[in-house]
Image (cartoon, rainbow, N blue to C red; front, side):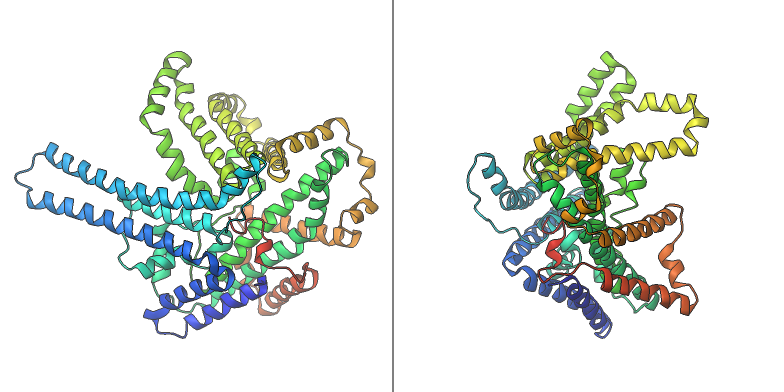
Length: 520
């Protein structure tokens, strides 16, 4: 299924949803989601349904256990002492924990076996088994487990209708790229009927084409250059080529991933559904922590709520923090749980990308820098208080943005190279063997980026930068365009559409599978 077919499928289903009676619209959306999965990856459909049914059943069972406990307490309100009520609730929680752990272990085990078996076999030089990797398995697994933990912790009521819950798990735009939806935000939108909103539909269509432009015009145009640089022997092209390669990869990955998110978010908005934001101009970040609050926001929020905080608040970490307070002081003790939590989170995020050395090093690299930043936070704060005028200045802000951009791009070497050692050799070549003279038009042509394509890439990259800068300053670009006078509005919209049609990189094998984060 090509991206335009995907967009047409979403638009057609959205059109039909406004024709059916309001109470049946969620059923049409469920049919559209399961139909999309059956068309695109029918062999993975049983795994998606298994996740949906096991999590739904476990959550429903936990809800019944909690209801019986509260009913028993109400019935014996006058005879139960506070310790007895506490004991009953603790017993119910232990009973709920069995179902929670059962569903959690089963679904994460399925994810781990299907996603990591071949990577782990590669560590031992064994041939891959070629196991099926269902479409969007990481996204729907994380989304389902988030709901399961919310029910276990009493933050959500269990869904009684299995078909409605299946819609929450299988909503088709999210399966390609995410974002990872939170139950309290997404589920009510999926189940409530949405009236036709012409302005909302136009907003969705603009975002859809903007996502296509980022993906087809920018990301896929720079892809051959990225592949050529990183396919060469590490360091063989020289340091300047390695530097251009990682900057090109930085641009490609951002436009590929955020373009895909814009595409699926635009399709969802055609139905009147607002997906969680997943990007907020990350390359304007002033620190690595700020960068990860802006990049893949839904995954970061999931890790924060279900891994970081539960880990940082455990009894062993609390004891370790108290011991550190006696030896290293209060500031260090306060920062220690956050430091250790960041290392754990980014190790898991690295493994989420894949069980290979480059992803593990990439995760540890980010986790260790964030851990160090947490430990040095008191020193940063004192510096800011002492040099308030310097910190508040534009040049210092620009310095922080450029410093963060450099730190992130060092990490991208680990993310893109096949092995961590290759990343180190490429970075070494930047310091010891730069060779800038080789960066010629002929070299670009050899790397699959002719000068014409390089000029197109530069123009649209500058356009992306200008729009992002305006958004960073609080300008609602999309809404402003849609409120322009009709002739100017349509001129800009046609320019967007024809830019995709004329300058997009097309190929017979092009499909949604070409996304970097496809099948994560």
